[in-house]
Image (cartoon, rainbow, N blue to C red):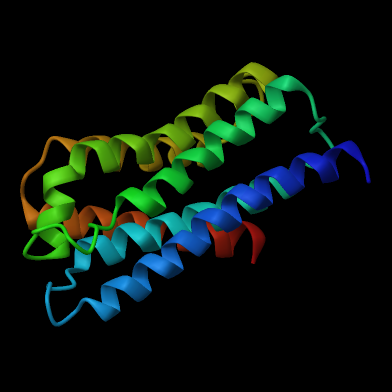
Length: 184
């Protein structure tokens, strides 16, 4: 195996763990639906995670010619993928918690959930700027980081449900369009 393949395996392991946690969490939500209202915000946050994981995986794959398995790359992968593993567990209430709905749980923990959601694109941005600088960057580079950092950061301070719905839907649509347009 090449050095990139080892690095990619590490990233895939973390991304896969996050996706497995999400699938298990969604199954628990479905099982618990008679006791606790499902709520759209938790489902949308999970969809943001799924799309973010797909986008990051594709991004790492696209950079395969430039990535070497050094300490910087390992830590970057850890801090890009690690927040997804945390979120995939933390975004769902435990079965014995007394939250009336998943949306109540989301709102009770939104600052942590959305704050952690910002870590991955922020680390990715810093890594890209350190390794390649600002030269030759197009507007899509800046738009991606503005949207993926800006929307969750703005939602952290908002307590309006409709704004969270709108923001998470917009983030899902943006990520989906970007994945399809760039790698479709």
